[in-house]
Image (cartoon, rainbow, N blue to C red):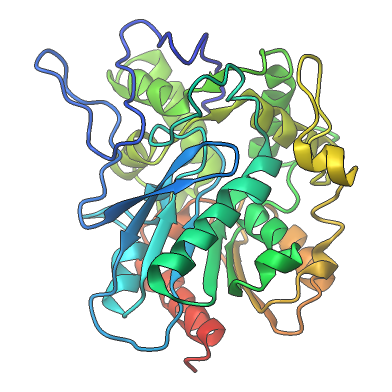
Length: 389
């Protein structure tokens, strides 16, 4: 996939323009066309300030028709992704479907993406982990959405790592009080295969995590810039490898063509930290989702230091809000059997899991058949979670 380190946040790779922080405008230059695309054509950008000083981008796509009484929907992207994973204008676009159906949609870009801004003067700003997304980013976004809309509760949705983050947030009683329900798309509550004999995507994740353990903790993984650089010349070996691995790992073959895969890799890829990659590698190795215990040159997360070792998978029983979950039976990263096990462990009494045969990991949202197959089910799930039955 696109697991490569950047030398320094302040020193972009040669030939690559540096993504401007805290902006949703496409990069432009009179000498070079833009290569990182993160605009929200119909969205309105808001800023979320976390307790530790990160400024995160929150894009609001308001409902196009009145639907009084419905809670807003806050969507969280996955690993090495960004808010556009939820919809591509002119292509598969779940956000457009939701807003036309009367839903007020908010999409968060987590810390580490090109539109997020680290605290000024903090040398180790990129020394963050999944725990910081769970206990910092999303709680701040929940507070912002509730404050700006006046809604007491929000439907929280997540794809892949965003699903894991949503489950982790719902395990906190103070945050669960703000959650009307969870919409989980292939949540990464369990990934990988320690024998190395599992799905290719899980093996790649395990190897990427092991490699990330060798990378200094204060580095950003610029997956967005590297994907754009590799795909600038479609016939280049780098572009061919990226397209082949990306399509094979993330989609069912019949759900994506080269044009769609290229657009997703150009527009929907985001950056992160080496710690997050390392932590996911540990997830893949241990088959558990543990809080960040640190590594050489990097301290444990503040949550881990305060709480001690915490298994987000082991605390699924603490999730008591209603849950609607869907997964692809052809998913090479998050096996459907893992979702069935997670469903059984959830403490919620109102929980549903839907299987989609022939779908992989990303095509549940951005596959050719998603608008006809998964989107209608998601609309029904949101209606169930809101009480709009």
